[in-house]
Every structure is written in C-alpha cells, then in structure tokens.
Length: 199
Image 1 (tube, rainbow, N blue to C red):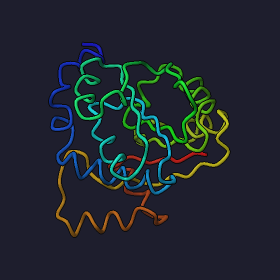
Image 2 (image 1 turned 30 degrees about the horizontal axis):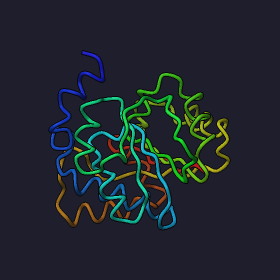
Image 3 (image 1 turned 135 degrees about the vertical axis):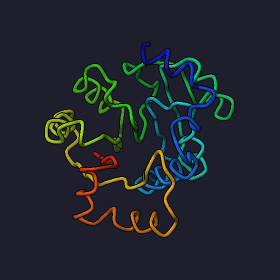
Image 4 (image 1 turned 135 degrees about the horizontal axis):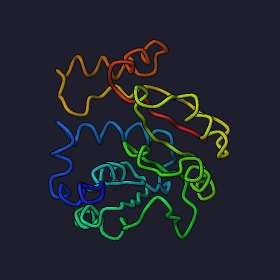
C-alpha cells in the first residue's frame, strides 16, 4: 500500500488512530511553535493531515495554512479549516511568502530533502520548524542540509510528549519542564523526537 492510499483510508479517524490524546499533543506542539512567532504570523504546514494542529495554532493567533498530499485528509481538514487547507505535494510553493513553515512527523517522506529545504527557504521569511526521530536519522547530515539551504541559525530541543500514550499529569509536567535543559536530549535516545527551529 502506498503512503497516500494509507492516509486516504485513515483520514476520517487519523488523529484518533495516531495519537493517544491528540488535543493535548497538538496543543503542546502549537504552544511551542506559536511562542516563536508574533501574533498574526502566517504559517504553512506541510503534511498537515486532518488539520488538528491548525485549529490549535489559529486559536493562538497564527494565520495557519496547511497542505497535504492525501485528498481525503484535505477533505476532512476543510470541514473545520475551509480553504486554509489545499491539496498538494512537497513541491508546493505558496502564492505569497509566509513567516514560518512547519513539517511534523513527515520529513522522512520528502524525496529530495536538500531541494525541499532550499525551496522552503525561498518562501519562508522567518523560520522553519520541524521534528524528526534521532534514532532513525543521523542528526549531523540533517542539520547540515538545513544550514546549506540558507538557515543560518539552528536550535534543537527534545519534544518530551508521548504520541501513543498518556502519562500521569505530574510526570508529563515534569517532562515538559525538562525539555529546555541540556541533559534532556538523552531521553531521545530511547524515545521522543527532536524539535528543530531554524531561521
């Protein structure tokens, strides 16, 4: 089964299928993204899925727009986000520059990573934010591609919020508090992604 067909088939239940508590996960991600941008900033989200993150970013004053390669995902996302979501692939270029570009849990699907990052840099005024699994990808070459694409500053931090399980509130709060600390990246050796912000 190809990737697009897979996502077409789970589009109606995507967030429930992929996340133990989708709202909490999206809310945490949205808070970290929005904290780096001014109110009203325009943002383009590649591989936006059913638009779950978009609803949280709009609530935080971010002018959200999404793109996804699955026609069914776009259909589902448009029920709440309207024409803020369009159908397209990783070659997409927005009609006007945006302040920020994001891509979550999907960079591994990009066929030509360096070319994609260079294209993103051409229409992104401020920053790129994405995540990746450091157990599956060598951090050095990935960040080298980000810098070569024209992003001169790169900040990496762990995202210590589980996707497929719900932790007791005190433990989850502790993990959130640990995220900015230097030693927290050790936890990503066994679980959790790294979150990258580049500008």
